[in-house]
Amino acid sequence: MKPALPAALLPLVLAACVAPAASAPEPLPAVRSAPVAPPAPAPAPLPPPRFAISGTASQGGLMLGTAPVGTVELLKDGTPVTIAADRRFVIAFDRDAGPASVLTARLSDGRTATHHLSVAPRAWRIERLDRVAKYPVPSADFQRRRPAELAQIEAARGRMEAAEGWRQRIIWPVTGRISGLFGAQRIYRGEPGSYHSGVDVARPTGTPVVAPADGVVVLAADAPFTLEGNLLIIDHGMGLNSAFLHLSRIDVPVGTRVRQGQVVGAIGATGRASGPHLHWAMKWKDARIDPLLIAGPMPD
Image (cartoon, rainbow, N blue to C red):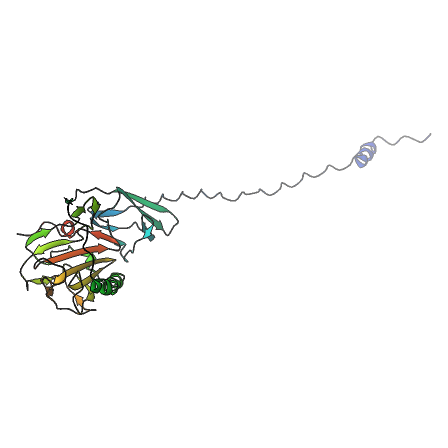
């Protein structure tokens, strides 16, 4: 039997048998979350593309317009329309145009804009001749010469000159009594003849004829044509042109740049004409249009 420890040593022994207390763990460093960026504002909606158009949407009418911002291609009823650097353009409607037309603009951002036009019909002057044949038999000389004349006219009207007359307010090339209306037509024994493609102004031979707008001369006949006589055609730009028929003289050669109001020739009765007068015809591309509708009422 081992001897008991002295009472004084007992607390020391007990203290030596007790494990030291574990030290408290160091706190983990605080985790800071990254700041959350506010959501980006939604892009402002693009303004709707708009056309600005003025003029007469009717058979034989002409209109000027501005295409929407960003337009890279413009179509009228599926056919390309030339637009200027400032987005301005011109369109017109044939004498026999249908009741509706659509402008379509393709924009640089991929959008497409459309503008629908209602084309007003017009009442044309129709004369019925039930006892008259449609046409006399053409002479051999006419048949020989006519194809070359038509080719010259087509080539002239197919030129696209850098002219700005289409932007101007069109004026009358001569003032006087209107003796023939655009669109008038005769029916021969039930068979329609060709309608009148321009407006006639009766004045004496030698009366000066002026340019109705700025342009470039694209045809100045060297000799009278079988039907048109001394024929002058001025391109006003953007597919718009004027033709002057039956002139007694032509004062400007092909390639001349003319100004609105400049004398370009004189009234006559050359070609197939019953008397001295100016036949003024206008076209936009293939559409025959009414000069009276475009230039407005004849000045007093």
